[in-house]
Image (cartoon, rainbow, N blue to C red; front, side, top):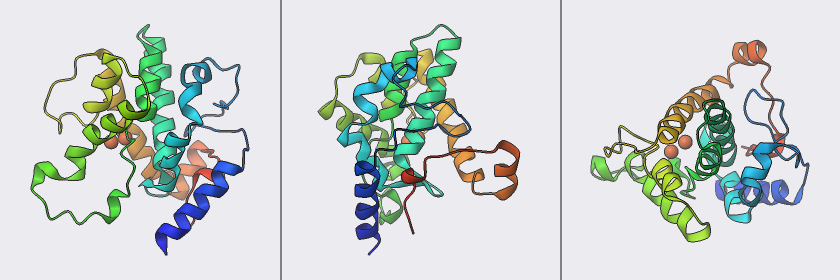
Length: 197
Ligand SMILES: [Fe+2]
Ligand SMILES: [Fe+2]
């Protein structure tokens, strides 16, 4: 029942090309081809593999796809402001949670280090490498985005940016469900990126 609804919603979302996509709290249309961000991720942002993340909820009512857009866009903005590799931050940010399953339904009677929080970065990296070409920095960003849970120290400054942005987006995505938070920040989202209950 739940899965059926998810797939139906996804098909609507994919076929309904509204051509508007916003990161949380931003009014920049990320599907605008004139945006620098768009040119950095144009082969990923509407790809049928990444669009599969629309069928899975990440936090609250935010889909995995929307979460990855949030992380990707703000990692790009911060990396660019710091004169770092903004393109790798944007691309790896978009793929960092490409694990492609509903982690809420997992029966996690497994050892601690085999739980989703520890294992999904490697699963996301495996999927990303299967479908897209990644550089070493992008691989590091994806595989270590849960650091310090994933114990190996990240190698690049861009990896630390994605780690921090991921945590902040996670908190914002939970808080956006609160009326006071919406009123305060006037958050905008594309409705098609939400899964109906
Ligand atoms: Fe993650
Ligand atoms: Fe994430």
